[in-house]
Length: 305
Length: 307
Image 1 (cartoon, helix red, strand yellow):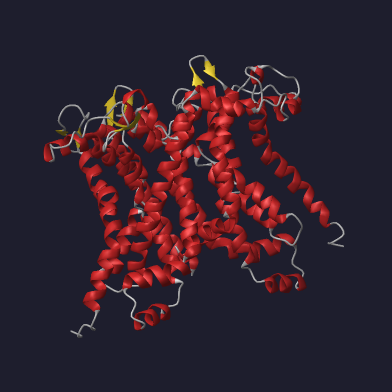
Image 2 (cartoon, one colour; image 1 turned 120 degrees about the vertical axis):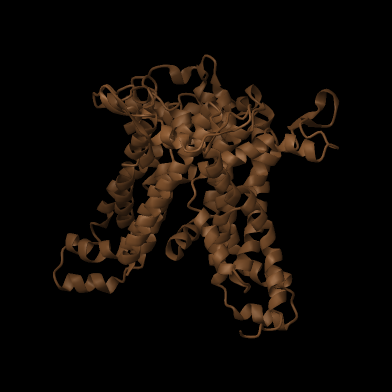
């Protein structure tokens, strides 16, 4: 045992004082709730009558299957449908990433007004939220909205977007492109592109490489770590997202076609007051996010080296 | 040759930029239209993008038809208090995590990092339950105070309702759970780690206490970091919707994102007022964005590069 340096005890005490305000809040509002919601998920509780111990019942009702005359049926088909919706809406992630990279490549050169473009593309992601969701609900208004008016000018009669089960999801995804394509990921890509040494390109040019070859051999590998980071964060966010958007724009409809897992938890917990069941859904979501993170982290670790 | 045709590069960018701005132009045009005018069909697409009338009056009307001033004041109050609280607690904790040595430091920090992965809905459920039962629980423990009563500032007909002291329908519920953030701690720790260690040593030799080192050395040097967190937190709280939606029922406790629903009338949405109100809600965000742009970039990259 090495002797403690003088003042170490004092330093520890100071550290505790600095940490305390944050730590108390962290324990009360983050760490403890993680445990508490698991405990909740093992009960059946409507907040009015005392909670009833339910064991793994919520989980089997949520994830289990039962046999019917027609074959195997999910105990909670809604959950699988909403998980499917969530995954479907996440298809916008690669589109946004490709768009962000394209925009970053377009802006990553010496030219006038580059700054103005950047601000314009970035603006929607800053404004994102309830106010913008109302705007897009109005944009998608089939009779007086901007989208169908624009389609009418080229002779297309637009669908009834947000109230059409077939078009509601694509409508939300199109909006997500507008919101996200020039956002944080474009900024990250720009920063990454600026870090690529220019002499690499010069050397490639001397060797007679074309634009596509330069992109494939130099640019793409250089931005790989950023691509990986953006993708991981977007996946983690994607599984949890969709509530605000759907609540304002579609109410989760039509026919549940825009209800995501996040929306399902809201409905179960704060509308139907099935706290135990809602906690079980939330915990399943947690496990999904955890798995995605761990897989990405393991694979990404190799990629970064 | 490249330079002579360089302007061609601007053509797709200009087209794209204009397309990006169209929804916002439509928003402004609607906000400036006369009542019912937005719901009149036009055959021209361009007519929808340019205000048909310049009804600036709408921006005044918004404050009259619903308690918009109260929503605005609530939003500002909550966002300012949460931001101050979160920046303060995060900065203190980040100092302990980055500049001081103590047993268990890195393990605890890892626990902080790990919770950043937990979905919001997981922690929100028990927090909601806690807010629900807190007044009753406090009544049992501290019966001297009426924890369930709705409170007012002043008395008589002019009294201003402020909800309960704690629990659902209280400013406590809107503010306190937001004041602590693992993300904020992480962000500031990264900033603090970038400052040279010799500064602390020198200040220590000069006889500074830890608090003085924090106040007089670290904070002034980490101002860009603090500004970044301030901006991110303020914007996050300003736009946050789900938590205020579930913990408040009273109209006088609504914040702007929840309050906008008031323009969805019984007989359909009054879009000219809704868009005017939405623009008023976005105004501070645009201001912050234009004033603090460089902090956005640093905030985004610090999470990516060092995370």
